[in-house]
Figure (cartoon, rainbow, N blue to C red):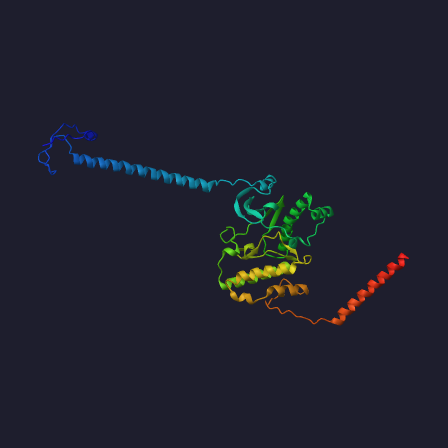
Length: 367
């Protein structure tokens, strides 16, 4: 029979082991008694596995509790003192002047500006930082700037010539257009964010929020039921009417430029707003704004496509019959009056006679 020596592992258990002999059958059966003080190989193997798993289990348990403790501490630290956002360079002058206390986070970045959530003393507001002209995807068009008055004649000439000073002045005028429009529309009762300050290309205004106090979603992010869609469409059409009564047309109104707070739609983004009385493109801009709204809401209420609020509103405006509380039907019929050819010919003849008299007067003076 082979001699099998017990492993040295037994000394871990405090057993003073002596070398013993175990008789083993070729098929693995024990044939004889063990010597006193010895531990079988099977028992040692089981003990070794038990100790290994115990150590591993306590090791894992220790790290699990340690990780939970660290996670709890981190959460507590984050809630107690959130890491402040790095202040954008354009907002630094407002912090230095005490108009803004802290920049909390970036809210959105659009084609013409980047908007940040800021803290002004105890109130949470937003700061709209206008992008430079060469970094904007929305380019200024003559259709939008036509009819805008420039009080300084030197600045007006520079803007016409396109000098460096003129381009800078044009950029300032573009930004000021939204500020002026917000103040005028807020005074007229239009639902727009309330402006607070405008300083070096940064507009600080009201942060529009939902019921939970979070930033309000854009209209295009919502899925509406037909009834609510009709309600919002009517609300915005009446806001367009109120804007036109104040002499302003948005010029780029769509579902992307409307926020929805706890009480309904709020119109935003007005740097391209135009003067309805001084811009030759006013009718086209108004019809496009109204059509954009109708097209969007018709996804949820298809019957809105049969309405023609745009031409009805413009017709009332042209005839001085448009008021903020005007009742609209959505129906419009263009009335084509027959041309009075006799009146046209009389006008032409009168013009010819005036020109003949002018030419005769010039010839007499030259003699």
